[in-house]
Image (cartoon, rainbow, N blue to C red; front, top):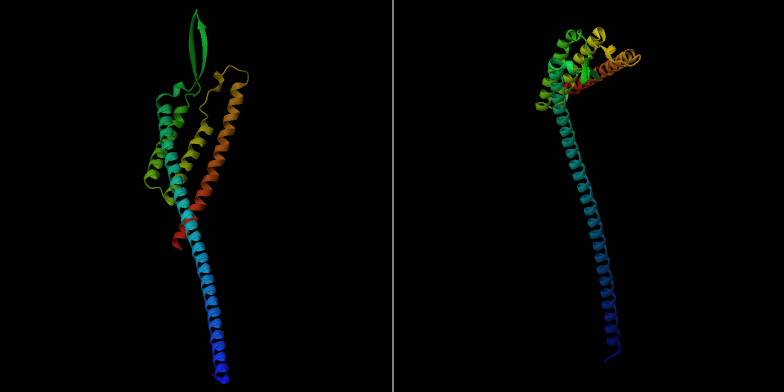
Length: 225
């Protein structure tokens, strides 16, 4: 074979080998880039799944909190109804049992002596007290059915106002007879302590009324806006 033909074949083989090597390198780079893209996409997908999972957990947490808050309110409404009903029965039919009890022996016979702590003036405050208790029962019953923000605030304001009326009636009439307590200065001490408690209750109710009125106004403004 001539020497020129051998050189031509060798150069063609070298050229083919170079092209094959370049193509192989290009394929490797393409595969590497695809792998990088797939890994980036998988990382992105994992991140999105985490975000969705966190969002679902937050939504479930808010839903559970709302349900627990609703349940707590229902429990408080029912407890208030039962408590006010018991007080209504007590003050109207069994108030004489609100008394100071002491044991005495008379002619060899022991017996319990009951000294009522409520004086005859209690009848002057009984009507407003009964009205306040009945309204509280009705109001809490309404809030069980219509557990909405605006009705709750409005009913709470009304009940607080009647609570103030009851306390002012007690402070003006003060239908208590602490003199039956035989301890030294017990009557005077109990009178002062009860007066302080009633004054603190007035302050608390006034603050509560102001706060609820402000909240009610803000809620109405937001609704209109």
